[in-house]
Amino acid sequence: MGNLGRSLLAALVVLLVLGAGGAIFTWYKFFREEPQPEWITSDPDMRFKYGSIGAERDAGIPYWIFYVLPRVFPEKLPGPGGYASLGVVWEEGQELPVGFSKKVVGFPRVANNCAACHTASYRTSADSAPVLVPTGPNHTLNLWAFFRFLIDCAKDPRFNADNLMGEIRLVTDLSFIDSVIYRFLLIPITKKTLLEREEQFAWLYRKDFPPWGRGRDDAMNLTKYFMIRWPMDDSLGPTDMPSLWNLKKYRPEQGMRMNFAGDSHDPYSVIIDSALGLLGAAPKDNDEFLAQVRWLQDYVSNKPAPKYPFPIDAVKAERGKVLFDGSCAACHASSRTGTVVPLAEVGTSRDRLDTWNEKAAIEANRVVAEMGIERPGLVEEPLRGYIAAFLDGIWLRAPYLHNGSVPTLRDLLEPPSQRPAVFWRGYDLYDPQHVGFVNSEAEAGRFGTRHEVSAKGGSNQGHTFGTSLPAEDKDALVEYLKTL
Image 1 (cartoon, rainbow, N blue to C red):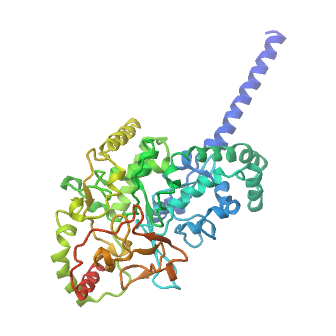
Image 2 (cartoon, rainbow, N blue to C red; image 1 turned 180 degrees about the vertical axis):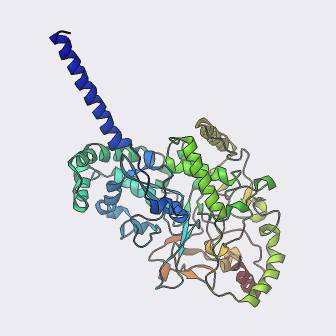
Image 3 (cartoon, rainbow, N blue to C red; image 1 turned 30 degrees about the vertical axis):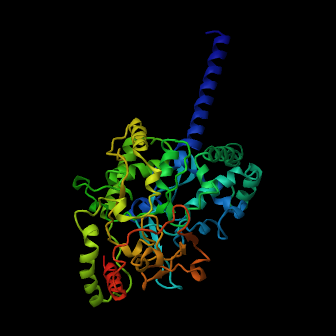
């Protein structure tokens, strides 16, 4: 081989080495996945609260960007306190709120899991620490404000490398390479990605739509605009965050349906669709994704409803059981439980029904099927009413009705005209007398969000069952409901 040939061969080897090195560097810095620590993965409750469901890959936010956003844009949050102002559940000593997972996919990223909306918290007294209940409804989370915060930050011209890197340098020492990656890649890409979601969140900015308020989301509109990418319409149907405990009680083979309006066939489908919404894209690996879904289904199916934490008057509760059997059991403790009750019978707001239809269900099922995922899916028929709810753990599911428009169980037993027309959602101090959360402006107004039943999606009409009982019977009935 001549000198020219040897030179060409040497150059080729150098190029191959450089190319291989570049590929390894790219994989290591942007795509390698590290398992989460054992303290998360080995404990079922911790895994539910902080475990990754795979959302970091496509929907994750680089950790240090997530960390400094409240420092750069505090005025875009509902109040002081950083992310805590959004009503997230935050355990003492934890790096992130419950429902926020951190995982290395090339670099540390933050995403959400199911626990963000499905971990309840309550305090038994003003000076007590919060009690956390995984699989319970997060009635304090202001999800509407969280979504808007991310978009509003991205729209601000101050969301740039100079400003964010200035804050990041105050809290950590990134290596030279990581600083370059954050400055020239991660910050611009994160801003671009968030701005691309602005159109899907457009209905959150409509002046004729009130904010959802703490503890509510607009689940089917999120499905329409994010999964099947439909154009915005005039529907608004915010509902309370549901509890997930004891999901094995739902028996699809007995005609039971899932979601407030019975628009899904079974728990497996609901968990898949909810997880896909968090992923923001098709799963990287369907087998891995569905294994996580099956773990979640097993976890929530076997998690019992929490016991009422205050004393119960046993004599009064026994009398209340007789009243329950006569006034409530036909829907809430019978073969009708878990099935759809026609709207004309229950009489509650139809706003939630108007956010979804048969055509949307067909389209959503098609999208999931094209991902190669098989599940019973969404019900391909018109919605006609609301599910007769199981009442296990009903004491912790305030506010009540599907749209959370009645603050306490005792209020629910009053005629709609006598129920509170205005109250404050999202305060975690429990009210054992009325069975719900403290909701007056004087106390809850400092932390909660104002709910007006006259606003779109906020009606407290309907469900007049038991409202004609004498006051002492209503009190006895509420006492019994504490035992469920």
